Amino acid sequence: ALVNALRSALATGTQLELFYQSQHRIDNGELVGFEALLRWRHPELGMVSPADFIPLAERHGLMVSLGRWVIEQAVGQLASWRRAGMPAVPVWVNISALQLIQGDLEAQLAACLTEFKVAPRLLGLELTESVLLDERAGDIYPRLAVLQERGHQIAIDDFGTGYSSLSYLKRLPVDKLKLDRAFVRSLPEDQADASIVAAVLAMAEGLGLEVVAEGVEEKAQLEYLASHGCPIVQGFMFSRPLPATEVEAAWLAPP
Ligand code: G
Ligand code: G
Ligand code: MN
Ligand code: NA
Picture 1 (cartoon, rainbow, N blue to C red):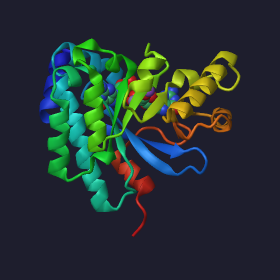
Picture 2 (picture 1 turned 30 degrees about the vertical axis):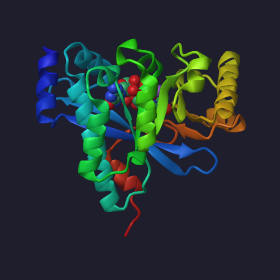
Picture 3 (picture 1 turned 180 degrees about the horizontal axis):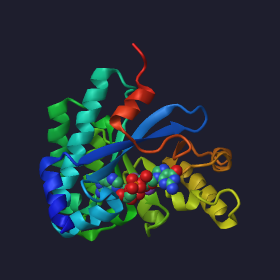
Picture 4 (picture 1 turned 180 degrees about the vertical axis):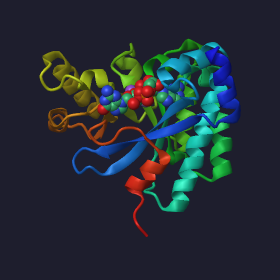
């Protein structure tokens, strides 16, 4: 069964890989970060999407180990990029609810960052609205506050697709909102999406949250976002998620 293959992929690590997708300032294109996206190269099935194997890992008790693998890999990459002279921008990892519920996420992060001597500022944490609202994680507020105090940046992922109330958002210790690509896809033509995006950008500015628009593929989308004050963008228009070696080829300044 697929879950056994995943279990052994996790044990060896050889079929798993993090890809990295760049994030840019909208006004000058400056590189400001990378999102780490997990990939599984299955020997027979080829590339299996995380959208398929993460739910499997969650159902079979593998998510905490898988999440730990992702954190270690990303932090190890940050250390190796620092040695290589890559731009010192944050890498953002996606955190699953089970990592907050079952795993000792805070201790894991601290141990890993200490081991690789990487500053917490360089490891951003992306949590979806459903993760933030999952009651099994207990009161998420003080936990996020601790992570933020240590220096981590925290982003709400897939923003707009969940149910977080605005009053909840107001008191939550987070730094960024990642505007889900569903709202970006049909910009600027779709009136409803255009209104939602403009409203989210205005609200985020008022709350002091920086917005990252996801899934930017076209110039017209970029122009709409820029004219409504969106500071940061991520999407195929700039780069697809790439293996670390290709990221280095693109961003490592020649000696
Ligand atoms: O990269 P791609 O579009 O295939 O990602 C599909 C989904 O899998 C996205 O929702 C993304 O957030 C999620 N995902 C990718 N990598 C990770 C990871 O390392 N951990 C978790 N929990 N989710 C991930
Ligand atoms: O849920 P999350 O936002 O973490 O998922 C990110 C996913 O979005 C990744 O799997 C990535 O491959 C995908 N993605 C990133 N940029 C684009 C884009 O410009 N267009 C589309 N269609 N997908 C994108
Ligand atoms: Mn994400
Ligand atoms: Na997202």
